[in-house]
Length: 249
Ligand code: PEP
Image (tube, rainbow, N blue to C red; front, side, top):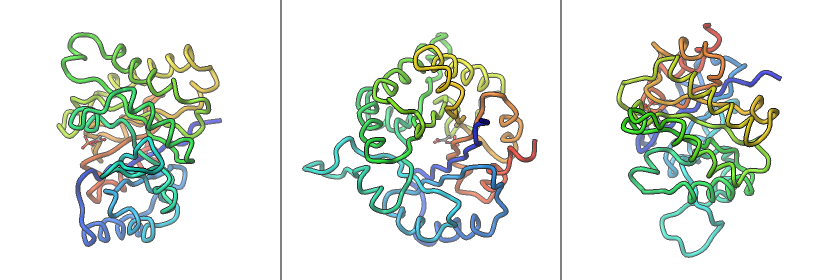
């Protein structure tokens, strides 16, 4: 079965009730390729607003969730709470969580395990920093991050991998299609070796890092690029163009 192209919009710490209403209106009016799965991820406090107002063929994701269902964990949000709001997806292991909030591979693995158990679909993010790429450690880092996730996954149906080189996130320095394809292919090879050929074939690998309306269709041509995780450009009208980039090929 061909892998369904998937585009996620990670709004990060941006938006207000008004600005997100405008953004949702743009998506609702936009002509979106029905062959593409689209997921938007507003900050927690706006999840309910966006879930209730966005068209039903667009899914909604949390930007994080904790590895416990409830308890004395001030400031945290549970996967079960996201499910309770009708949220289908969660982004886990984003490099900003890893870098700024010091989330470890193991914590991310625990979160993935808990989110899947609670019935969420997971976008599991991996990616190397510039110094790691320059030291020729890209696959070493990405495989280590993947292994920490894979340890907790027995069924890959609800897992999508987002390869997001840290040096390309929010910098305007997009990976070349060749750079993206090379790592995506390596990730698929890793899945084949460590999990199974069937999982490697079926699991979608999104690219994230300065994707915009100008570069999306070229990146989408690469064999192992099955979608995008988009930050900055997901807050702009060009997000619709990115969602339709695969159809434009
Ligand atoms: C991201 O944060 O996941 C991301 C890819 O950001 P940007 O598109 O802004 O580089």
